[in-house]
Amino acid sequence: MASLPQPYLTVSDYIELERKLGEKFEYLDGQVYAMSGASTPHVFIQANLVRHLGNLLSGSGCKVLGSDLHVHVEASGLYAHPDATVICGPPVADKIHGITNPKILIEVLSPSSRRYDQVGKFGLYRAIPSLEEYVLVEQDRHSVDCHRRTADGHWELTRYLGETAALILTSVNVTLPLAMIYEDVPFAAAERETEQP
Image (cartoon, rainbow, N blue to C red; front, side, top):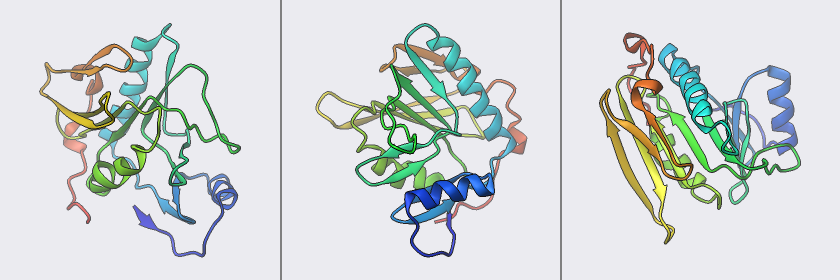
């Protein structure tokens, strides 16, 4: 993510900037960060996740929401737009409607944001008390990593690889085949530029 050159912004300034420009940014420590444009595979994967996971959760009291949603990490002040968010029960929101009670957060990896999603953002997301699983989805192959919070507060990683594998989301008791996540994804169009530091 690239920082826009600007002075310190309040959260209200940030929300107004998004509304005015009609674009999504992330916000942390008074700065806004442009979200890189999504590749075609990224868009397909995100749509598949929202549709298929949403169908599997139908009637469970849990919902899948797309990236238009703000997730607010109260401990750090981060406002983010995860590719998919699962909430169970009524959404708990702050005064600007940033959801503060996600159960699962899902990010589709791209070269420009990979390291931030895997390390920096994960470090911030872990401070959300309700968060039980953090899922990272590759866009160029059947590969999904799921970080799960254990009973003692640690995080364990499970990797799911291959077309026949299935992502197990224990927090909502759902199994999502990778074939559904990657349904009709045009892998040839995946981003392959050099990863940024």
